[in-house]
Length: 525
Image 1 (tube, rainbow, N blue to C red):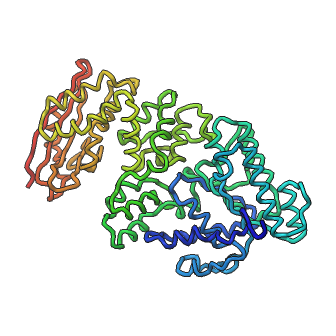
Image 2: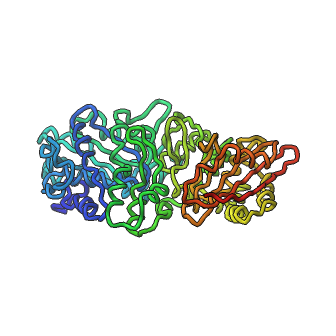
Image 3: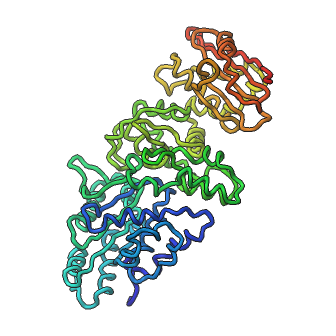
């Protein structure tokens, strides 16, 4: 096939990035080019970037390909982008031999051996097109690349998308996984024909007891994003700029739904694909399930590891939990404990990580957890989430006995915790029980209010809803909870737009295993 190239300097390689530029809600991440260009032909020329799906990895690969690929004239694509002002902009523009491969195309429906053979065969074909009549028949790929470099001085930039698909599509096949890593090591490590390797995927590089076969790579992960943090996901300032366009959605709504991924280098990060879809459709909702869905999350949260169920329950309740991320082997089939499962969920985008703690980042992912647990009929937690709307309505109707009964109804089945009879667990259950309130209220726990700290403040999102102050007691009385709310003047936490506040006192009596509830309404001037 004369003049046809599978991977090398493809004439249509800029089409993907051109389509991204044409999008109404494009966000300029072009300074990634300068950061990556600094690594060309240095000891940092091996880069592996891991992020969850929907975080702009493929768009970045397409941008780099459009910029670097020799034989193209793509200056016009970057005319209005930040990279245009960089001093090294013209040095690398359309100046490199680029080999761009999406590994999904070769390993999703093939064995690893077949995938490697097809990649090698196609790339050798491309090299033969680049230098006709030079390569002997039957030579292996690495030797062909080495010959081309020695004879013509050609070096190559490798752009690899979905590098980790072997570990996702071929779970449990350790021999094939090792064969794949050996292929990459032989292709890239200590090879002078490599100008740059830029790989992206969901998972970091696989670790074995003897270390990594690809230890020459600099990794940029959800745990340690480092210098690449600004280029994947939308920052708060970028979201505000998008909201300044003529859109139906407000900044606060987007923040509630899609913010929450924390990176120490730049602060909060938003899920970019979900933000764009919400802006295009004019409505915030769960767009995540279109690319992952219930089965993926279900697989991990139902694994039989001590403490995992309790940890997931804590997270769904809105709490942070501690995690040890060091034991994770960067695959999805060799878990040994709950911390490794939780670490996997960080890389998959279901949890946000900061300073050895994790939490569910936002409303979109919280709905993923809740819907998955409801679907599983996962013990008392499923029951709590399903009854949550009924409980909120009972509270707003001042049905004290019903509120107490609904809480008491789940008590005996609370198997997710080793011990229910402690104050922390009681609070966790209360948080779960009022999960549905998050649709109409902003829930804040242990917040400063008046002369102290309120256990739970529910701030209405719409002015026609009352404010709610909820105070918990353990082996005390609901009356004392109400008294504490009044004496410490917690009601001051609400602004002037809220005219009615519900004071809710809940007490759990350990020996009687009884929940008592008292509700009072107060008019606010």
